[in-house]
Length: 147
Image (cartoon, rainbow, N blue to C red; front, side, top):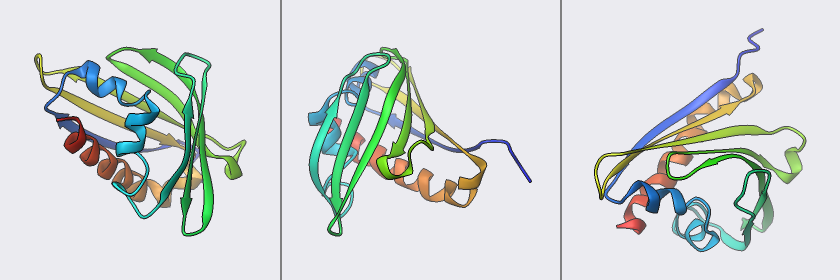
Protein backbone atom coordinates (compact mmCIF):
# COMPACT_ATOMS: atom_id res chain seq x y z
CA UNK A 1 0.00 0.00 0.00
CA UNK A 2 1.39 3.39 -1.03
CA UNK A 3 1.58 5.85 1.87
CA UNK A 4 3.13 8.68 -0.13
CA UNK A 5 0.96 11.78 -0.60
CA UNK A 6 -0.50 12.35 -4.06
CA UNK A 7 -0.24 15.68 -5.86
CA UNK A 8 -2.40 17.57 -8.31
CA UNK A 9 -0.20 20.18 -10.03
CA UNK A 10 -1.39 22.92 -12.39
CA UNK A 11 0.38 25.92 -13.90
CA UNK A 12 -1.08 29.09 -15.42
CA UNK A 13 0.41 32.27 -16.83
CA UNK A 14 -1.35 35.58 -16.15
CA UNK A 15 -1.27 38.96 -17.84
CA UNK A 16 -1.18 40.65 -14.45
CA UNK A 17 1.41 41.37 -11.80
CA UNK A 18 2.31 38.72 -9.25
CA UNK A 19 0.91 41.00 -6.54
CA UNK A 20 -2.51 41.31 -8.20
CA UNK A 21 -2.76 37.55 -8.71
CA UNK A 22 -1.60 36.83 -5.14
CA UNK A 23 -4.09 39.28 -3.64
CA UNK A 24 -6.99 37.61 -5.48
CA UNK A 25 -6.44 34.57 -3.23
CA UNK A 26 -7.02 36.54 -0.02
CA UNK A 27 -9.92 38.86 -0.91
CA UNK A 28 -13.44 37.38 -0.56
CA UNK A 29 -14.77 39.66 -3.32
CA UNK A 30 -12.17 38.30 -5.73
CA UNK A 31 -12.59 34.72 -4.48
CA UNK A 32 -16.27 35.02 -5.40
CA UNK A 33 -15.34 35.98 -8.95
CA UNK A 34 -13.06 33.06 -9.75
CA UNK A 35 -12.95 30.29 -7.15
CA UNK A 36 -16.65 29.84 -6.43
CA UNK A 37 -20.02 30.77 -7.83
CA UNK A 38 -21.74 30.70 -11.21
CA UNK A 39 -18.64 31.93 -13.08
CA UNK A 40 -16.99 28.58 -12.22
CA UNK A 41 -19.74 25.97 -11.80
CA UNK A 42 -23.44 25.59 -11.09
CA UNK A 43 -23.55 26.84 -7.52
CA UNK A 44 -24.52 29.88 -5.51
CA UNK A 45 -22.24 31.59 -3.02
CA UNK A 46 -23.71 31.60 0.48
CA UNK A 47 -20.83 33.18 2.40
CA UNK A 48 -17.11 33.78 1.81
CA UNK A 49 -14.95 34.76 4.74
CA UNK A 50 -11.27 34.70 5.56
CA UNK A 51 -8.73 36.01 8.04
CA UNK A 52 -5.70 36.35 5.72
CA UNK A 53 -2.81 35.98 8.14
CA UNK A 54 -0.68 33.02 9.17
CA UNK A 55 -2.87 30.98 11.51
CA UNK A 56 -5.99 32.68 10.17
CA UNK A 57 -8.87 30.55 8.98
CA UNK A 58 -11.22 30.68 6.02
CA UNK A 59 -14.71 29.39 5.30
CA UNK A 60 -16.18 29.45 1.80
CA UNK A 61 -19.79 28.24 1.81
CA UNK A 62 -21.61 27.47 -1.44
CA UNK A 63 -24.93 25.87 -2.32
CA UNK A 64 -24.48 23.17 -4.93
CA UNK A 65 -27.59 21.30 -6.01
CA UNK A 66 -29.47 22.25 -2.85
CA UNK A 67 -26.65 21.19 -0.53
CA UNK A 68 -24.46 23.61 1.40
CA UNK A 69 -20.76 22.83 1.17
CA UNK A 70 -18.33 24.63 3.48
CA UNK A 71 -14.72 24.69 2.23
CA UNK A 72 -12.48 25.39 5.21
CA UNK A 73 -8.80 25.82 5.91
CA UNK A 74 -6.03 27.62 7.69
CA UNK A 75 -3.30 29.82 6.22
CA UNK A 76 0.08 28.25 6.97
CA UNK A 77 2.39 30.58 5.02
CA UNK A 78 1.80 33.97 3.41
CA UNK A 79 4.79 35.41 1.56
CA UNK A 80 3.32 38.10 -0.71
CA UNK A 81 3.53 37.90 -3.71
CA UNK A 82 5.52 34.68 -4.00
CA UNK A 83 4.00 31.89 -1.93
CA UNK A 84 0.73 31.01 -0.21
CA UNK A 85 0.22 27.74 1.67
CA UNK A 86 -3.03 26.66 3.31
CA UNK A 87 -4.91 23.60 4.44
CA UNK A 88 -8.00 22.61 2.45
CA UNK A 89 -11.02 20.51 3.39
CA UNK A 90 -14.76 20.49 3.51
CA UNK A 91 -16.26 20.84 6.96
CA UNK A 92 -17.84 17.40 6.66
CA UNK A 93 -14.46 15.76 5.90
CA UNK A 94 -12.67 17.20 8.96
CA UNK A 95 -10.30 16.39 10.55
CA UNK A 96 -9.00 15.08 7.19
CA UNK A 97 -7.29 17.98 5.41
CA UNK A 98 -5.05 18.44 2.41
CA UNK A 99 -2.50 21.16 1.69
CA UNK A 100 -2.40 23.64 -1.17
CA UNK A 101 0.82 25.41 -2.16
CA UNK A 102 0.54 28.40 -4.52
CA UNK A 103 3.85 29.65 -5.95
CA UNK A 104 3.92 32.76 -8.12
CA UNK A 105 6.90 33.87 -10.22
CA UNK A 106 7.05 37.28 -11.82
CA UNK A 107 7.54 37.34 -15.59
CA UNK A 108 7.89 41.13 -15.68
CA UNK A 109 5.76 44.06 -14.51
CA UNK A 110 2.45 42.79 -15.86
CA UNK A 111 2.86 39.04 -16.15
CA UNK A 112 3.43 36.10 -13.85
CA UNK A 113 3.25 32.35 -13.69
CA UNK A 114 1.41 30.49 -10.95
CA UNK A 115 2.04 26.87 -10.01
CA UNK A 116 -0.46 25.25 -7.67
CA UNK A 117 0.32 21.97 -5.94
CA UNK A 118 -2.52 20.28 -4.05
CA UNK A 119 -0.99 17.65 -1.74
CA UNK A 120 -3.47 14.98 -0.65
CA UNK A 121 -3.54 11.76 1.30
CA UNK A 122 -2.87 8.68 -0.86
CA UNK A 123 -6.48 7.60 -0.37
CA UNK A 124 -7.42 10.51 -2.67
CA UNK A 125 -5.31 9.15 -5.55
CA UNK A 126 -8.39 8.52 -7.72
CA UNK A 127 -9.37 12.19 -7.24
CA UNK A 128 -6.07 13.76 -8.38
CA UNK A 129 -7.10 14.36 -12.02
CA UNK A 130 -10.47 15.79 -10.98
CA UNK A 131 -8.78 18.10 -8.46
CA UNK A 132 -6.27 19.28 -11.08
CA UNK A 133 -9.10 19.91 -13.55
CA UNK A 134 -11.07 21.92 -10.98
CA UNK A 135 -8.07 24.06 -10.04
CA UNK A 136 -7.23 24.58 -13.74
CA UNK A 137 -10.77 25.78 -14.44
CA UNK A 138 -10.64 28.18 -11.49
CA UNK A 139 -7.29 29.58 -12.63
CA UNK A 140 -8.66 30.01 -16.17
CA UNK A 141 -11.59 32.01 -14.74
CA UNK A 142 -9.17 34.08 -12.63
CA UNK A 143 -7.04 34.83 -15.70
CA UNK A 144 -10.12 36.13 -17.52
CA UNK A 145 -11.31 38.19 -14.54
CA UNK A 146 -7.99 39.79 -13.60
CA UNK A 147 -7.13 41.32 -16.98
